[in-house]
Length: 347
Image (tube, rainbow, N blue to C red):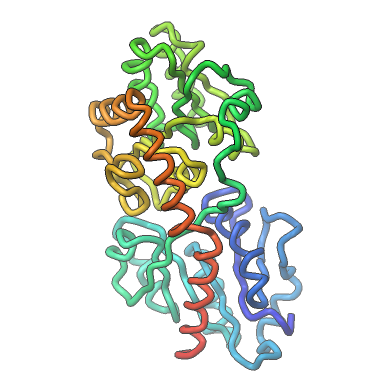
C-alpha cells in the first residue's frame, strides 16, 4: 500500500466498456507508477487492493503526496468524495467522463467536486461545465493487428475462404443498430455473391426476441447462409482479422471502441455519427461517417466500399496507419499519466 499512488475503483461486477478500459490500461500504467484496482469483476492478474485495506487510504503513500482516486462512474466518484470529505483521506479525485448528453444534477454535483476531469472525446467535453482535458481511448495494437494472411484468418474462424466478409460486432440490440446492419445487408448481398456478413455479439435475455426477429427477417430474405449470427466470442480479435469491411451502425454510443479495433486490424469502417466515431475516422480516407439511424446512407456507403477493391484496400492501409499513430493504448496510458502529474502539481 505504501507504494500505491493511484487507485482505480471498479464497482460494477458485470463486464462493461468501463471495466474493459480498466483491464487494458492498468497493466500499462503499472509500468509507470504505483497503481492498484479496487472492486469486483477484474482479473486476478491486475494489481489490486482488497476491501480490508481501504482504511490504509487514510495515510499518504511513501512518496508523501496525496493518492489519486480515479473514478469512472458516479458511485465511484461518491465513494472517493466520502473518503476525502468525511474520513479525511488524503486523496485527489479524478473523473473520466464518456457521456455525450447533459448530465443530471447529481452527476454535476459530483463532478464539480473532482480535482481533475478527463473527457474521452471533444464531443464529451462539450457537455462538461468544468475545466477538463481530452484523452481519447486507445487500442491494443498488438492484439488488434492485420493478419499475415487474411484468407487463412478467414478459415481460422470457420468461414468460407472464397468470400469477403463485412462485420458488425457488439451487443445485439436496438441501441446498437443491429437491425440497420441486417437491413443494409439484405439490400446489398443479393447482388454481391462474393460477400457475406458476420454479426458477432450476445443478445441478453431482454433482447432475445429482437435477435430472433432479425434472424427471421434474414431467413425470409433467403440469406441465412450469408448473414451469420456467430454469437459472443472472447477471442474477437480473430474475427476482425477475417473482415474486409466493418460497419458500426449504433444509434447511441458513449465512445465506442469497435471502429478502432477494426482500424487497428487494417479494416476500413462505415460508422454512424455517434460517440467518438467522427473523431476516430478520417472521412473518405479510412472510411465514412454517416448520419445516425440512416439506413439508406449506410447501405450506400457500405456498397461503395464493397464494390471498389482498390479504394477499400487503400482505406484499410490508412486505417491501420491512423490507429497505430494516434490511438495506441500506450499513448492513452501516457496521456493519463501526464494528467496525473498535472493534478499532483496543483493539488
